[in-house]
Image 1 (cartoon, one colour):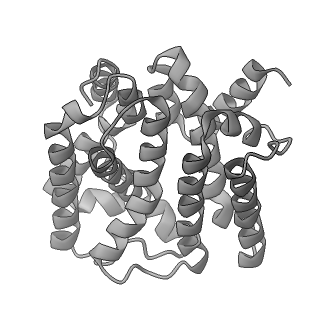
Image 2: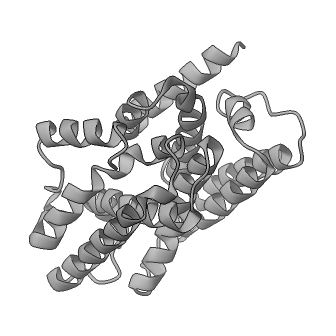
Length: 257
């Protein structure tokens, strides 16, 4: 299968399953899309593994399949014949594959569906998932300071997690370590602080690597809403108006994530 077809398949997966990241990636330079679409398609496949099968053991098998695929990439073996694995292997070096293996391992928490012990545990999960995803993408695109990228990724991960709370609760999950309004607002304020800290060090992310952070810009409005009115979280009313989302995307594409 030609490379363009592999990327197209990944783009189609992301468009269907993660439309926000699809729009963010389409705002990135074409060369960056060859990295971002495979990474986001991989992330989508791994993130939904615990939810698309009825038995935890089947989900465990799916996650293990991805860990083995990543190990093969890290060892320089031929990529498995798979619409996501092949372009992912082109986008990753050995270290990138090893980092993503940690992301898959962190997703095992979704199999247990137990509540997080506290906010510290939730932040560790967000760093291992969203933080790692953004860092792998950034380092594949250009020079960047890891702590800056991870902090921005953690904030984006929290925004996405808060927006997913109603669906997670409907699936029987307790997604928040403390669901009281004051605790939710405190969590959102911490996310805003991490985002502000990352932005203050924006110079530590090269122009090329900033394409990995386009999806971060929209997190600010979501976190602001959660901090100001925590009841919006359970009600599923965190998403900003479409015009605000478009403006945020334009600003992020220009490097002002």
